[in-house]
Length: 263
Image (cartoon, rainbow, N blue to C red; front, side, top):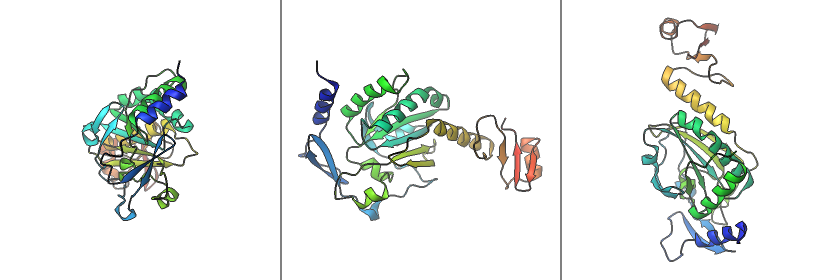
């Protein structure tokens, strides 16, 4: 029997693109030690800036579930896009497993999940087997992972740390672990970025989805540490008369701080 490590090595070698083919405008490949290392030619002056309220940049990419057009994939739903520096990394394995366990909760909220890592599709598929083995709690892996070996999507979404961005052109550029929450209008609604040493909080991603969707539906804001069912804040732009008509009873803690029931 082949060992998983040997099979993984074979998969990675087989996933290396031919250097005879046209390469991305963003990178050129150099093969070292059986792995594809990308020495990027990103230009700092061309780096897109992603802000809350920006339209999420569109792209086409191969994924573990086939080729997608990102905007078409979003459709009329919310989406959580989250990135990883490489496959078979320990912290990222735990994160992808946690999202797999929570996938039914995201589905209830009409939210799609999609991951990204800087390896090829075959490597991703082998990694998914590990994720299901050790971190998914028995849940099947049910969302796609984008293959971003040329860092094209990483560049579009500004997924490099400052130190790595300064090293562009000098070696392999890993992506940071970013989270983008994007609404059905293709607008970026929330951005969270984590360093390599710190795992994400999947429950927090779900919590902010609840807060964003409730804010859109009812025109409210949520206070610190808010969770579903707790009181919400009436925006200062709403007069007391309008607040009474819209929300019914409310509490005035300060003229600018009024709370009301969330349901």
